Length: 102
Image 1 (spheres, rainbow, N blue to C red):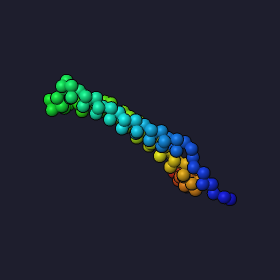
Image 2 (cartoon, rainbow, N blue to C red; image 1 turned 120 degrees about the vertical axis):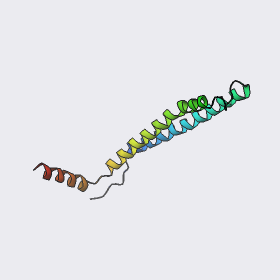
Image 3 (cartoon, one colour; image 1 turned 135 degrees about the vertical axis):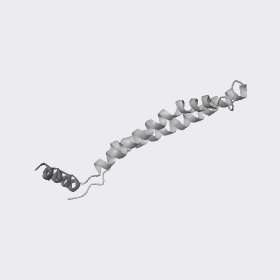
Image 4 (cartoon, one colour; image 1 turned 180 degrees about the horizontal axis):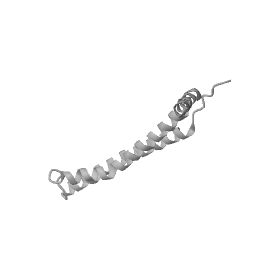
């Protein structure tokens, strides 16, 4: 029998989607920076006095997308690893479970 080198499409799609989300999180960090710097140049805030608010703004704007990118990548990684399991490994695990039950 010929061994197929065909890659599963779902992990690749998830990796690409995770990369897009990560790029968007970088974009949100950049837009947060431009917004904060425009407030500083307008004199509305002083970063030294309102550091906690500035950090909170960065975190609330970008961390959710970083988390989503990581989770989507991890799901793709897990699916890829499950697809790469050989039938002999799966059968050995099933045999071990059968022996424990008996």
